[in-house]
Amino acid sequence: MTNLQSVSSPSIHSEDRAHEADHPTSTVAKFGVEQPLKLDCGIDLAPFQIAYQTYGELNADRSNAILICHALTLDQHVANVHPLTGKAGWWEIMVGPGRPLDTEKYFIICSNVIGGCMGSTGPASTNPATGKAWGLDFPLITIPDMVRAQAMLLDRLGIETLLCVIGGSMGGMQVLQWTAAYPERVFSALPVACSTRHSAQNIAFHELGRQAVMADPDWHHGRYFERNTHPHRGLAVARMAGHITYLSDAALHRKFGRRMQDRELPTFSFDADFQVESYLRYQGSSFVERFDANSYLYLTRAMDYFDIAADHNGVLAQAFRGIKTRFCVVSFTSDWLFPTSESRALVHALNASSARVSFAEIETDRGHDAFLLDVPEFFDIARAFLESAGKARGLDKAGG
Image (cartoon, rainbow, N blue to C red; front, side, top):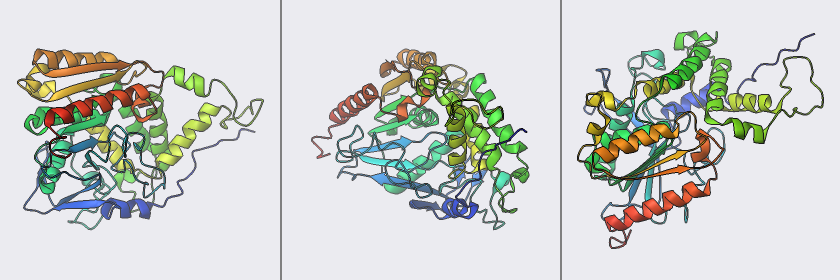
């Protein structure tokens, strides 16, 4: 007899996710109909809100602010307990007193991106016109839309310029968009494990994930909130497929190899015989507890559309012409999702535009996710770059 084992149902109820989407456990900046967010798709989004977290204190001349841009499956809860999962912040290893993003020196801001599901307006939010979740009625958003919303948030906070914008993966795309769209507002930039456009391979992986979500019978064409369901099986499969791309073959082999999960012999079934299978199923089931399926569709699509050069006549260097921002570009040797070749292309474009840029390729077998893990060389590079930027900006003289 064959025993079929599926991904388990989430323990967090859809009502919890829905409540966090509208009434987040974060500070919220609300923008009324008189302050619309102008989207690339041609729609003015209003009203809307942005949920964000801050750490540290803004100095007297407002010169020590650092914006963290989060990656696809993350959110604004960088260095605090996550309200849905109860887990530690996703970048506590980098943010805090004495850490590279030192909260005793810098004022750290991270907002949930537009289109997200942790308090910034997105498909999981309530549409004021209908009183129901937006679902697929929510307009398509882009990386530039995310950055425009962040710029509006900074205006609300009274922060004209940023000491640094930092982020990895989708966060790195936002960093690059910041420097292209608002170069005068960014003193330094630290884009990590990213590229200036999404590759065909990455678009293909995202389409695989989206199709998994949409094939789930509980998706209901994006109206699952109205049916009191959630396409957790499809979203879990999407997460499993995506998570494989965040790792490397060497890391998987080192961590799991072909070792069995709590058994010595195969079960001759479709149970999770191997440790790597059990790990992926855990990643899938834990992800659906905190993330909205429609947000996954929207944010992956935003990454697919990203292409800075396309907005500048196909010439990447034109996006950074005359820029004064200091750059530190970081890649990892085992990252095959955003390989070092993509970072080198960015560095060449920055050099062609006479930008001030440093570049580091860090040797590690931890894959794309290395920027989230304990990689001391990355910590040292980030710390040194921020300290140099702070000194150049005169933070010591400003009491920062």
